[in-house]
Image (cartoon, rainbow, N blue to C red):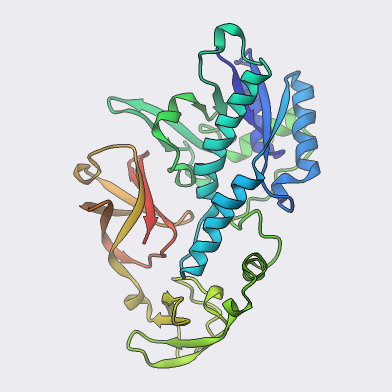
Amino acid sequence: MALLAVALSGGVDSSVAALLLKKQWPAMVGASHFIWPESRCCSAEVFTRARMLCERLKIPYYQVDLYPEFKELVVGDFIATYLKGKTPNPCIICNQRIRFDLFYYRLEALLREKKQLSESEQGEPLFFATGHYVRIVSNDDGLFLAKAKYGAKDQSYMLYRIKKELLQHLVFPLGDYLKDEVNELAAQAGLGYESVEESQDACFVDTDYTDFLQRQTGKSELLKPGEIVDSGGKILGKHRGYLYYTVGQRRGLGLGDGPWYVQRLDAEKNLVYVAREEEAKIESFRVENLNLFVPDLAERASLKVKIRYQRGEIPCRVQAAGNKLQVILKWPAIVTPGQSAVFYQKDLVLGGGIIC
């Protein structure tokens, strides 16, 4: 059997994934990536936990330094997207550009250099496992990402940008487990640490993200106050700086006669547009930077789209629009530019793109 590398974050999920796989995979290594000095996922404690687990499992442990690439590809995209008045999801970009791309291929090269891969395996690709709650399924159209068996922890939305050709080399052992079951396995194994609280914040932002953006860009004018206006341009109030707001936001606007919702941001004019809920909702939008697992997405029946990680899916249909897709929703919703729209057919991930 080919060599398997397990990505270790120092948390319960990846540790249990490694414990499960060690029982069935004879040739295995553990690995972590270093991506940001102040990141909670790159602390000394995290790497110590990962190394100790590998010692317990009697497998080699490796670290891969990807700080320069992470800063350029993930943090750079995070900053650029916010400066355009959009709301990024850096975890999705990290999964695409770092974890399931550079980390995988750099680790594969490192293992070949260290001759961790045997002579008979030198021509074989490295298999790669993580502790994500997602599955890989096969049908007549090939391999697909699929929702985890139990939806509460499903992370397929966060992984939709993985390259289709890489799926054949990926292993997700937690896709059929409940989170409580994983915690119980960790307790039975005596891992000795509790589950790390899941956060939807960017792991590299140690303070308020607006302060982070100021420090990284050196532009204090980014938080210049401006006007809050309605769709007709009528001034309703003042804002602290457009970076403090995101499309769909309702709280913290400081407006009377509410509720109001942020409808759009004009970064160039430093304006925050607001509207009533029904006006803020739209029935159609476009997505760009596509990553599709099927060539005939527009022809697929029973198509649904998820437009935020913690939101439900909405029935939809799609139409080609050059190198973009036009998405038509069955019912209106508040749609946030910069976030991802991920398309599903039942449990299968058919692809997605960035809302523009």
